[in-house]
Amino acid sequence: MEHDFRNDFVRPPIGGKHHPALVLNADYRPLSYYPLSLWSWQDAIKAAYMDRVDIVAEYDAYVSSPTTRIKIPSVVVLKDYVKPQKRVAFTRFNLFLRDEFRCQYCGSKGDLTFDHVVPRAAGGITSWESIWIAFAQTATSTKRA
Image (cartoon, rainbow, N blue to C red; front, side, top):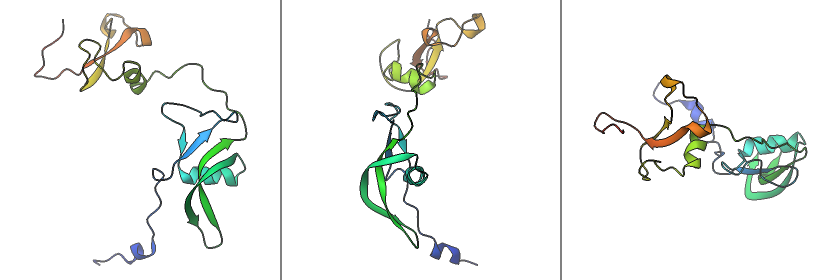
């Protein structure tokens, strides 16, 4: 069977990246700034249907079912306040963000990795204070002192 007839009845979905919804806390501040707190349009509509959010703004686009036509939300506000985290998560991305995506040895951008100030083999720990961004070592690069 060369042609799959099932594909003739399926519409391509509207991607969440095309219509993201900004999520604001109950005090109208974003849940997070970087990365910005965004939901897919499906999650935003589901939360509105479950009465967990208020819709503040909408796109000019619609989604339809056989019985309903709904405007896609672009900004939603949570009805219940979510207490923000006090500590920033220690992640590779947040570490790169802290060091502005630059090597701490030479200041240039490129293929980055992180180095321990005190190597783990010598008892060093993985923490904000003991990690620095550096160029990734390859077989052709010279080893730093």
